[in-house]
Length: 594
Image 1 (cartoon, helix red, strand yellow):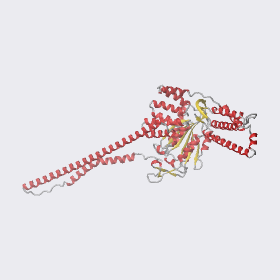
Image 2 (cartoon, helix red, strand yellow; image 1 turned 135 degrees about the vertical axis):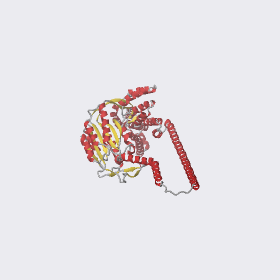
Image 3 (tube, helix red, strand yellow; image 1 turned 180 degrees about the vertical axis):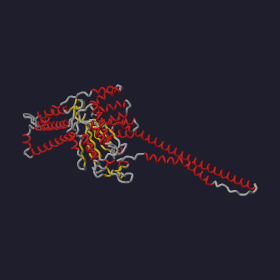
């Protein structure tokens, strides 16, 4: 059961207020009677009045007011599916997630302001299919859907640090958006307008936005560009660990980087496709202008789908409230001969009459969901998944359908897909369903060894349902697994450090042995040279003295040979340096990452 208007429960305060007013009225009447005169005479005059009947009537009216307050909160239960057609267009939001979007010239930052304004825009949409292209140097996409909460959830925690490549590739963003809309057109819906809403703060750094805009124009896709930022340039913040500010970004030359809005390119992109260009400043974001531009575009009816409609059960409360008021009206305040009258009861009954026609009998649930539940219960997850696919197609915005589909995927060990379905189910309005969705989401993460995510999901489930014993148990298991994983990593690190230390010691030992061998070789060589010199001296002493002849000067040749040998020894190092220089020359300079 759920309440459609839980904010109206404050009307229950009317009950204690009515009790207090009746108590004050009875006390004042008693004091007034005492001031009239002789008590015996007054008692005879008021002998026909019945105090218990007055108290009973007051109790009946207070009870009726309490039931009426609960009925106004509109309790609902069960649900049914009804056919509904909605008119809309296809919209892809291309949102810039480059580092320059962290600039704070627009409070609280360009990116956060853009997210908030886009959420405000999406709250006003109805029936439009919305997709997302998050871009910097590369793109991340979310397929078009009418589940606006899922789109908001996708970009809510996304930041420039999550983008694989820095920069501002507007051309790639437009290409991704065009491909997304082309796939939608191939599935049907070619009669509706298709729009790309481009929000960026900087000039394109490494793509061809005009070429991409020309391709979009050929397909009839309009681009509405929204420029965010300063024309003169704004410093790009540098974000350190934990999201803390760490000064401003500098280029290779040590100069501060500034992001400048290239309105000329954005205007040309919008003009090529027949769209429009808007510029955002700190005071006005232009959501109203965007909404006005979208309002004049062509919308068509989407395919018929089933929408969940809850059954109203407040009539169960109105019936006893009406009965109590009838009794209150019929019950007189005197013992005999008095006409019943109750002005408050008549007023409350008249207020109830318009609500009596809102009675809706309970109807059965969606048939596809029932078939899926039966198949899953009988151990046939493949058939259950097929049935839940139908249910999700019929009820795309129903959190329960996504929850059931996640259960089928989990039973098939497709944990990544199950995680996505459970994540959508966490947007349910009912706290019980949200707690179960977070619990199953934790189980999916646990199966994929994502223990940090599993711990967070289990804690969310316990926040919604502190008595969830299985969530407590699995949370302890996840914490234990995380500790074991950290311990294993620590042991592996210690083993690696020990191995590195052993390798280092072995290398040092090898170096020492090599030095000792070299020293020994030098000693032996020196000893051989000394022995040879001694032998030559002895030979000269034994030979007769001859006329000394000039000896050839071999020292330059020896020096040249030594130089050649040294060059040969050092050539691999020189060759590696030369290769490194060649690689540095051949490598293209990195693109701007802001």
